[in-house]
Image (cartoon, rainbow, N blue to C red; front, side, top):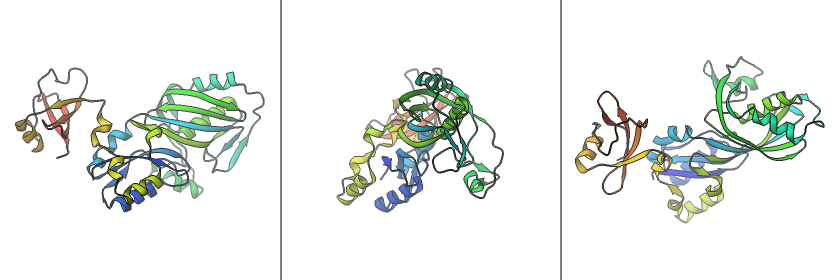
Length: 296
């Protein structure tokens, strides 16, 4: 039971509770999710099983896409609809053109301050636990990358946007900062993750469908192969001797001009039967491809 499930997490459930359900249904001990979704958010949640858990880090590093509904005119302490109102402002003078112009300033490399209600740690404590206890600590601003931001719909005071961004971008912070820029305050009212790396919301499976699939033993059709998340890397096919060396942790020289000069320092390795056997990384000193993760 090795692979990845593309689950459509419903709002109101934690990412951990979805993992617990998958672990119960599959009876697989090694289950983990890639990229936390807030309990109030919904959408794509990749859940990895068995040896699939070994590629979680690579899924987390992929770009994400979200559809967010932002309410202008009200700011909260949590930056979303669950928090206490800390500011109210007039939105009557905000036009679509003004909103689009403001959103444009968040495209590209930006700096964000993580919200207190987040899973980041401060001296070993989760920030949201400190926030619930009424404790506020200083958070360092951090860089974030927004590849695309688009206004999808605007019916004042509600604005629906789509954001494509890199790892570590807080959509709640973006909503908060948008409200500051417009001078009226704002908060995130609803969030849906529509893509996580190669996994799209259109293909995501609902929990009821997942339970039915495990009930009638058709769940295998829902599991993506481990290498699905690595398709953006080059691939190589190795012979029997190289496969044996890789399995034993040794490095190999790969022909076809793959020497790391093109900037790629990782690749996918398959045996002659087409089985995915390893992630290799290029050792510039040894001029060899070394096994980083072996899957057989």
